[in-house]
Amino acid sequence: MRALSDDPKQTELAKGFTVADYEDARGKAKAGDVADKNRIAEAIRQRFTERYINPANAPSCKDCDPSCKHGFTMMAISCLMIEALESFRRGWSNTNGRSEAAFCYFFNTNDGFKDLRGHCEQFYKHIRCGILHQAETTGGWKVTRDKTKVPFFDSGSLTINAQCFLDNLSMVLIVMSSVGNSMPPHGILRTGKTWSKKWTHFARIVANRGTKGGRRPKGFTEGLRLIESAG
Image (cartoon, rainbow, N blue to C red; front, side, top):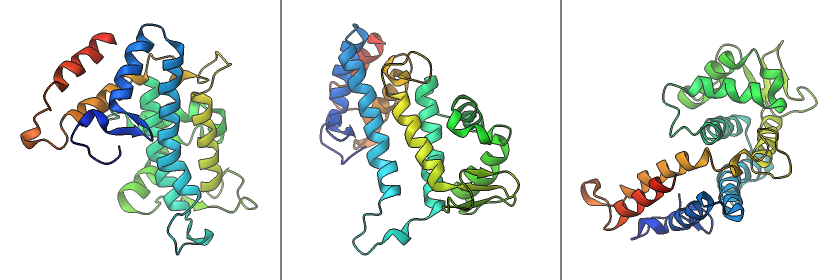
């Protein structure tokens, strides 16, 4: 979420798309407005693209050059995206107690990651948990960005190509927010049946930000009630 505002409803969930915009679009989408379902799906796609994929692909610090890119950073970003995207897909407010399952679900339902099927538990332990908790891979797993050596995943050397992994993840995000194909996961973010739970959870978080004692701003409780009654 972007910079804090005196009015939590003006907090941006994605560039140009605030909590207030979400409330408005969600109410209309619940009433059957396809355009607003698409608007929310596009905001989700934009959120992940602008905050995670683009920064990983193009270092923005003025003194950086392409060599500043690093596979570990790309894999850390990719792992948090997988858990969040699977939460949107399944309507989870969080992945507490379901984090490893999120990776298995994701690999097993997205063909771009089929090479990792049968390895999801080890990937979770040695890549996801290794990098996010210990800042290193464990169990002999390795990370590279050299496509000539490892196109995606080499099970023999337990090496994952971070650039290919992120590229495939970018395609999944596009597919999930796309139209024109009725088969899951195509357009799943446009159905309105899963994202509502996740982003209503975001609204709850915003409701308790920047207030003394965690008290919600005047009128926000009623707004949240209206969101929940619409879903």
